[in-house]
View 1 (spheres, rainbow, N blue to C red):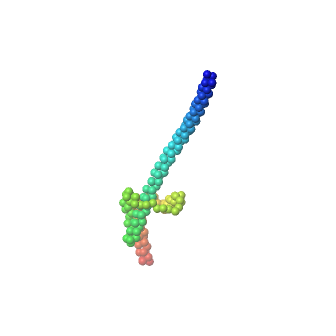
View 2 (cartoon, one colour):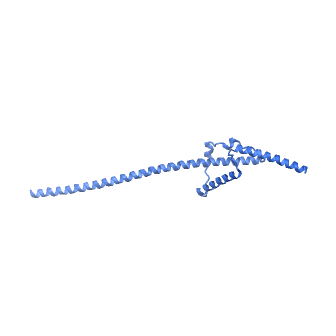
View 3 (cartoon, rainbow, N blue to C red):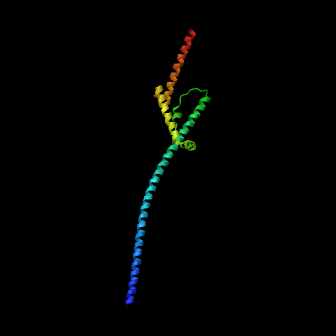
Length: 177
């Protein structure tokens, strides 16, 4: 009987030790699971932030692409007007408000492909800033305040007619002298 009791006690001790090992293993797994869940939550937050950042950058890229296509459209239109002006014996005509403010259609914008450039964006941004400063300085120097092309053209034509009248007076005086 004592041998049987001892064997039952030994089996009971072994079972108890197995149970402790199992509980310990379960608690370690639970800790790993908890730390993995925390890492997963952090990674999901980072992914969410990155997705928002990517969406913002895509929106900025798309806006810049539309602006670049509009600029290219207006540049092409200006080039076309200059060529037509050269073909028409350089006669001056006022820039029509339709041409100068014409907005391109979606199809026209989609047809314009981006131009690949060799230099960095910063180079072109500084070039734009320099051009803007030059324009402001030139306007100050000339005391120009008109930004409307039609009004500026009318002023130009009045100045041209005044100059022509003065030149005729000078020629008349030279003929009399």
